[in-house]
Image (cartoon, rainbow, N blue to C red):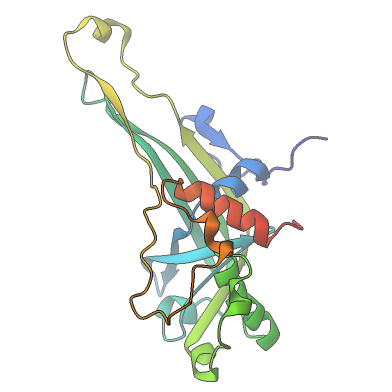
Length: 237
């Protein structure tokens, strides 16, 4: 069976370097699930805005949340067209010419129409999911959200209508004649790695770190921990 892919049109088709473009769900979803911070772009009254926020994916739907007072979130209630992007920086590339200096990266652009969650049950489930997406099962360990906390938080959902991934993983690439030049070149790998946990200094005596957090251990790549957490939280996808 052929892998499922996003529809491709003028909205999401790469305009250059087509060899770096991917439209299949597997590639797009994996890159989304390996991230936790996104940027959402939209237009309000003819002016462009781009907002960084935490997000998560359930099936083909993306969710993000923020303050109910947010101008961005207030304007999503009527099906605002939006573009959500994530980028993983994998390396800095130093070549033998300024033109060929580059970076290795993996990125996704997802397009759709965002809607504000106004159904109480749907919103309640999403507010649990924003925690459990990162820390599977943790919401059940926490005190219940206060009514004022729920009121102060808005959640947006966006069905992925179009999406594309773009990947560069070539390292140093120079013109053939430039390899003979006595100029140093290299690739500098870039990784986001989890550090040692720092427990809250006001923990009650006897309160220990739950085994459920073992997925976040010092030295592990953040994207690996995020993918493991997503798989655990949404294993039925």
